[in-house]
Length: 136
Picture 1 (cartoon, rainbow, N blue to C red):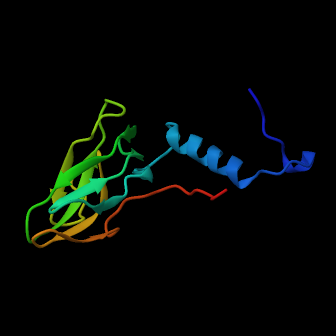
Picture 2 (cartoon, rainbow, N blue to C red):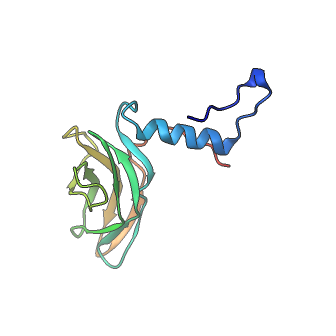
């Protein structure tokens, strides 16, 4: 196992090394809590669809999922939640709720979506994120 140099040995931990270290810790079972680790950004699709980018999250366990699309009802305000599953890389089940109030422990909220005849606005309100990441 390779060890990192310590400051007493004159080593310097770069932002890239610290980012990799923090991501490995978050991906391990040492990570406590839940939230988005990377990606899973919401963007407007066609009409009433919202696109979710690929990413990783932690709910009941670490989960990675591909990008996917969700159709919303007209004239609504909804919060989009995704569920952890046992199939790494599968599109997660999702729920749309009228509030950001947590309803199940194995779901993570990605944000708030407002629609009229099409998607009108997307915000990070209610989004559950945790961890930190330095930019290299």
